[in-house]
Image 1 (cartoon, rainbow, N blue to C red):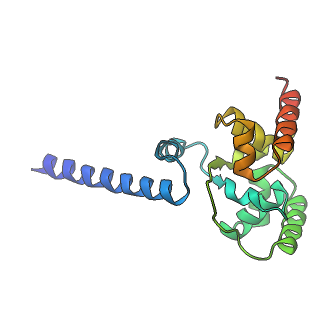
Image 2: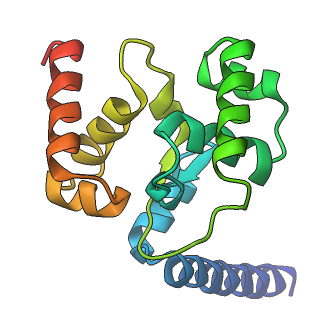
Amino acid sequence: MKHQDDTQAMEENLDLAGVFIKGVSEKYSTPFNEVLELLKKKEEKLLIPTYIFREKKLGILEALTKHLKEDYGMAYHKIAVILKRDDRVVWTTYNKAAKKKKESFSIAGQSRWIPVSVFTEKKLGPLESLSKYLVENSHLKISQAARLLDKNPKSVWACYQRSKKKSGK
């Protein structure tokens, strides 16, 4: 009897997980399998949606710090530790972003979720890191990455090329 109850409870949990993944997949226009893979990655806990980088007023690092501060409620020091940057840089970057864009980010169009660890490599700039990740890890073409970020494909291509040179590839 106990085994049957455990099996039924496990099936119900799997059904709920499927509903959750499907809902996230539809809400963020992200393939079901990609959402499932993101949930499996334990070492990359903090995920960032790419829609925040579409904001024309903000640079990549500005959008990232604004998102972490306002949407996750993180302190400046915690953001600095996560991004492996100086606290003063994070404070300054956030304050510039907050002046440029007072309102919250709006969810629009297709988005992908990327680990915040993408932005911790010091020798690469934020757009270089993001371009490299989208092309090499998400297997997007330059044109697809540019469309996802609402950036000029030439800029994304140039940043990706720089990232390869800096990484020694």
